[in-house]
Length: 140
Image 1 (cartoon, one colour):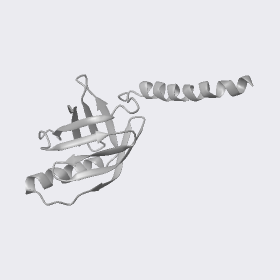
Image 2 (cartoon, rainbow, N blue to C red):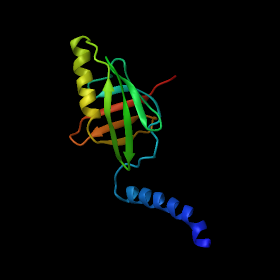
Image 3 (cartoon, rainbow, N blue to C red):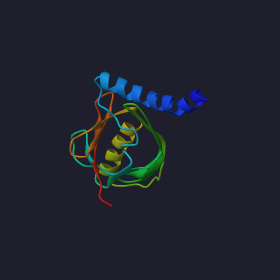
């Protein structure tokens, strides 16, 4: 009987062990569900904000705009790795600069991403090849 009562405690220890392993690995810490909320695309690869670019994360879904078309899909986070997709989206034509920025955003979001939280409440999503998307909290 006592062993049955301990099962929930052991499951909680597994999460703590994973967090400790993450901390000892030297990788940036990631808090589960820390992306939930509304975000503006503040900077794409050092080239500035994506005009109209937004992402909104809920429990397991993501939606938003990559500057031209609306997008929606699922997301998961395993330790320091964020996976988004597959994504579905509208297919409107926009001016070439908006379409090019959107293609760069969608290609970045399709890659496995590291999540780096900064001290100002922002988040940077980083692909293994160095591409980056900085997200800033978006006011409702």
